[in-house]
Image (cartoon, rainbow, N blue to C red; front, side, top):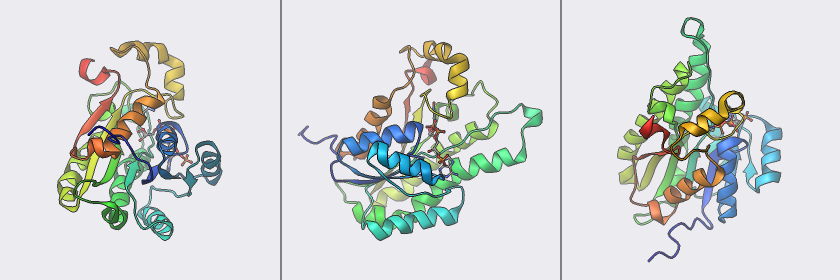
Length: 253
Ligand SMILES: NC(=O)c1ccc[n+]([C@@H]2O[C@H](COP(=O)([O-])OP(=O)(O)OC[C@H]3O[C@@H](n4cnc5c(N)ncnc54)[C@H](OP(=O)(O)O)[C@@H]3O)[C@@H](O)[C@H]2O)c1
């Protein structure tokens, strides 16, 4: 019964923002596990570098607009007749004190972190449904954040709000897409080394690691393990879940 529970061999996956940080960790892990993986981000050179480094296929797109989300779905639709797994990972943040927090930092962050997962999920529905069955549903994984579960220390107003909203969108879409044999779950990471986290971790990395009951930062196997669970047979009866992968920070701090 346990044979193949975490198997994603032969599945087709898209990881947005798969050219850097957590997205790249997930893309690499899925390729290693035998999936055919697409990654997407704005920069063509980052997509080309990710192809060389991870073995995924890179397709550049600026996912902060619905048109680009739709174009990406049609480009992948021209190459594949099914998509088993959509990982909505691309994200951006912004930090500024309350009095100085600019209006465009709301637009930039909400367009990418919240609206893109909605537009992408909708645009990929035909391909996800084509891959889906009762026993092996299509899968959507949204990358949220523990900053959408707790009140964050940093003044990242639009970011933490976008992540709380993406968790709620996950639950709403889980209800709507369950009958269409598609699961929708979120992973809420704690601190992982990445471009987004570089300055924060340079300044306070040790302190942040020590704040976790497990005493360290996240590493690639942590987020890949959660992805494999949600993407493979092991996770076929899980939908609408928000899974913190954070060394225990959210529960205890
Ligand atoms: N690292 C952490 O500790 C942490 C913790 C909690 C949650 N998260 C979440 O994890 C996800 C990945 O974050 P990360 O830390 O790995 O960040 P990262 O290293 O900065 O990677 C972000 C990725 O998103 C892409 N991207 C940015 N803007 C885009 C756009 N408009 N269209 C398409 N792609 C775009 C970037 O590529 P281009 O620049 O080429 O577009 C890059 O591939 C985010 O949703 C983030 O909120 C991270």
